Figure 1: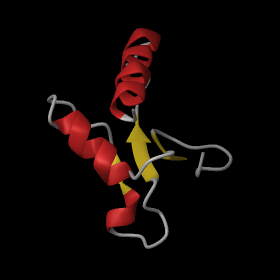
Figure 2: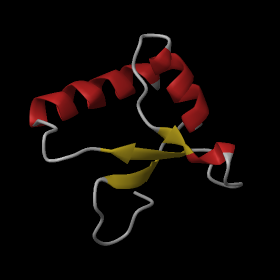
Figure 3: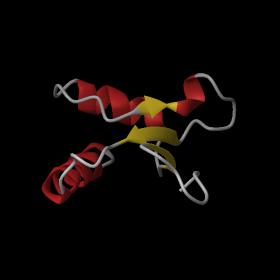
Amino acid sequence: MLTKGSFGNEFAVTLPVPAYDLVGKMSDKGFIPGFPLGRYYEGLENGLLLACTEKTTEEQIGVFVEMMKGAMK
């Protein structure tokens, strides 16, 4: 995880693939997973900024994780 310590609704993670590629694959299925940091920050090509709130359920997070796993294959 790129974000260290406490955070509010947003946090950044490092992916094993370029974030822009992951966003492209998931957006083709109608889902925008987050903001690819490498587009604006050199060296963070695998960084993805995510956001969730207290209204995000554990089930929604689980579905999101499974979708991301599928898109990274």
